[in-house]
Amino acid sequence: MFGNYIRQLREECNIGSRELSKKINKAETYISQLERGLIKKPDYETSKLILYYLKLPENQIGEILLKFNILKTVSKQYINSIEPLSERMLTKDYFEEKCKEDALEIYNLINTLPDKTREILKSLMSVQKL
Image (cartoon, rainbow, N blue to C red; front, side):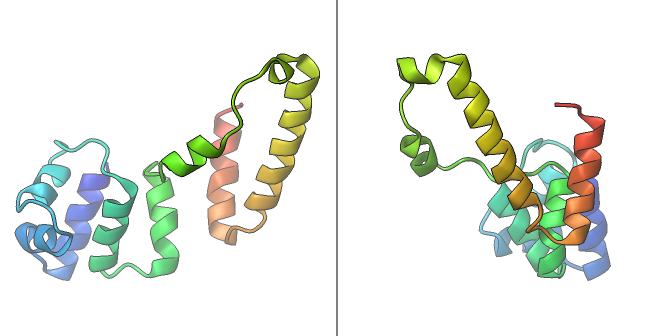
């Protein structure tokens, strides 16, 4: 659980939960609630900020968040940029072509990730057959 991990790091850094909550501009009880599992899905940016204040190296923060399945949410701007559904998009050929394009894009994206992140992602993909 992410909250347990945060508690361990926070204690190692000798930072109080209220102090850390204030640093990330949250209510004084935020970190305590997170550590006790009352906050189930902390958002990506808040989680990233917590790890930053707990002195995790920046190159490890993304890997840790991925490990705990804390991912960026899709922005409204991205959603609005997606072409509206049309008759053309409902054909089998269109879906097959889009799948090929998406698979190539994902493959290229994966190859740009740091080695450790790529290993974690590949192990996750092998567990969850898509």
